[in-house]
Image (cartoon, rainbow, N blue to C red):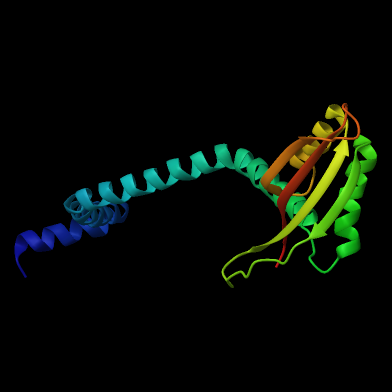
Length: 184
């Protein structure tokens, strides 16, 4: 054995704690070299994690608003679904028009359900057409028209005609063609 090496081994035996520390220092130095060599890759990974964290934080901040908007959309969809007309329920559908008559005090002279147009399978809803004739004072007839437009049922008025009635100069008649939105 070399004399310098023998002296080094004797030194290590005399100071074992220092020997262990020197060994750990060398292992740490080798690890630091490899980490320093991959510092660019580590920086890219850190930037990716930072972007993910910022996006998550934005979602958490806006989460309550999104939940409120989702609840409002679900409520609107529920109300629409509840107010859809069922084509086979003729009595219920006619009751809707007679209920408006009772509220506005106009006289519903004619109420005629029409044949529904053919729909494709892609359509979510069905159009259910009606034609009706209402008579009364201007306020009553206009109130009936307003109630149809703003009522809970979704109605599309396709045509209407106002006429003065011959029998009474203060009386008007209103003929309406409309389509109610119905369940398919």
